[in-house]
Image (cartoon, rainbow, N blue to C red; front, side, top):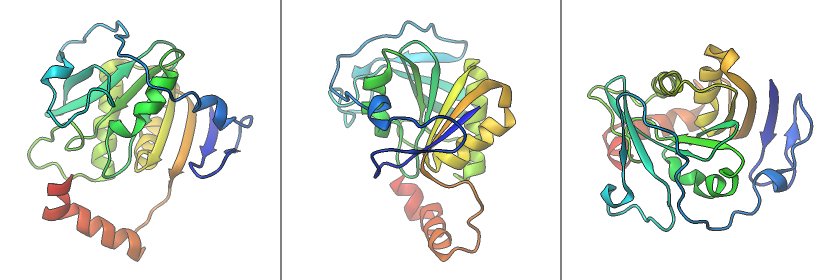
Length: 212
């Protein structure tokens, strides 16, 4: 497994165990492209929702992808599945959603199969009653989505909360992952850190959940 770190503020990322990755090569040519269907058939329990059926606040010009929805553990999970080739699992942070990867998907879908899910309760996904919105809960849902889609030879791209969430999924399924791209994230406990404790308290409360 090759592991890379990418900083959104640096021109060149640092390689931990593999060769240096040229960020300009991987995340370049982020020009607008037209909508295309990657041709992947729906799986049992999955339905396709046309862009005209999405919420009106979703700008089709900025997010020109087919929305896909499937039931995972009682949640309605929305995800993007664009392109063909090696799988890139694009995991967003908190409180964002798959929209954050729109330009990356446009640039890479001619070479990769880009899977970008929304965690339950984020973006266009809805959470089942009682969902706790914690990293461990998100990791469980994403792991089950990986299993449901029968993904293999995956390169994880984890940003912000997507780092610990995706690393747990990869650790539980090492045979399914071939690479890790770690971007502006963390992979260690933050218990006791006032910054994270206050942020978690605020975002995990009624106001934070309403905002999400």
